[in-house]
Length: 172
Image 1 (cartoon, rainbow, N blue to C red):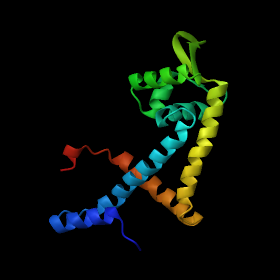
Image 2: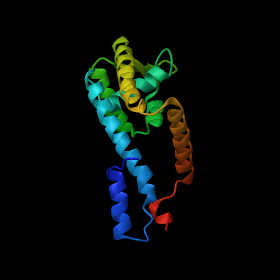
Image 3: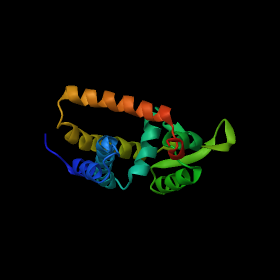
């Protein structure tokens, strides 16, 4: 099997710090690099629709919520793990672009609801397909059974990471 830059980094640490045990870098270094590479490629694809990854995430959350494609800003903030300020900025940009609209919540006029416009629905559906095609082209390097196995392994690893929740000072 071919080596890559991550192998070189791990080997450098082994050479320079014999007792360090840098093996986790072989996994997380590749996860980080892969996420960044694919994310950057998707960002370029989304730009064709005049949106960035952050705006795509908002549109996608609304579309996945099902008809009538409406959520409270608080629900969007929780789903996307954003601050309310970060969400407001995204919603402002999307509303100016005509992709979402904010309106008073009919059940509570003090609250707002965010809805996809017809243009927003078209943009998210088309850009989602294009973004998935980027991912498919990369995953096609693996046979389907290996893709399934990789998804299972990453699911297990993510669950373990979420359960661990260890702060850096606690790990010592």
